[in-house]
Image (cartoon, rainbow, N blue to C red; front, side):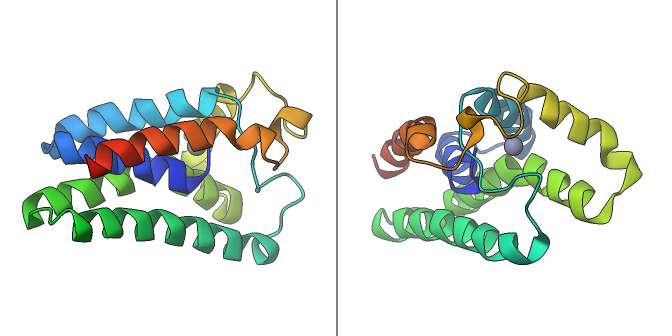
Length: 153
Ligand SMILES: [Zn+2]
């Protein structure tokens, strides 16, 4: 799923669970669990770093704006704000590893990369279920909305 979805889900859980070890133990498996659901991707085999980097930046920016807006408008305490931001970062972490492997080819990341590919196996790379369109964004939108509700209540 996109980084915004992962960040929002991590932030929402970080709002309620403040122990960073607990948070990590929940959010890393949850990242892979979310990736099992059908979702479109703006990053594919044909992507180059140049035509992808602005999409990643925009994706990070949208998630950050929503999270910071929630923290600001809900007057969330500094301690819980840190937990929310920590949750967002941990939640996106597996995709950072994927990008590092993809771009820099760190050999030690290969197994993690393969596992990330494995959870996506239901829909082959390049299949229409992985295309970047609104139909394939439905799960991203649903999980993001749920997370936004949890963040703002
Ligand atoms: Zn992922």
